[in-house]
Length: 287
Image (cartoon, rainbow, N blue to C red; front, side, top):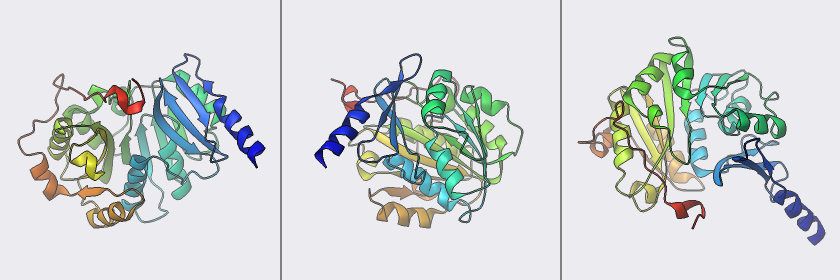
């Protein structure tokens, strides 16, 4: 038993890097088909090739819950993912909603080459990948062509500023079909000023919004992820509240009414008026 364990740890230590050296893939010593993707040492994605429904990161589980609830179970959807990483959520959608058509917009060609080589994308049915930045990629999409747009893009551990503006949110709304959902992963810390402004931005564009996050993050006690959903149609607040409260990691769900108070007085994010919070250096073990 110890020899097998040692062999698995040795395999896990043999990391594979992208051509530019920024991205790295490591095996999970506790799951035979699990892989962790980091970029410059910052964890970005976790994928289990044998079980795409296994969502290891807490924030990704919350995003998966939203995907589960916005349409009847198993119903195919058309989705656009701004930010690729290891394509965790696209793999989840393909596994839980067979027949879905998805596009991933990812500007990092070296990262995509690494992912394609070790974590094959051809087996993910209905998935296409375009090497382009999110702003240009969304702008090139036709009107009312998708049911879901997902923003999960980070550069140097922060969300690119041009992807959190009111202008970008309005372009996302243009791309969504009636009743479509915009799902965004952002990060913030003490005071939650950025999160409040992001909520104000989406409330100015969409009729309904909700926010999911762990209580410690919502209280500003620590830097962490917040999941936002926005739509012109009503969102499944009650079901997501139930899931958030009963998950392995407890989270809170704030609906449109609660977010009106949360974002009161916050200015929407427009044009160059964007300051995206930077996580503390110690968050990822950096001294």
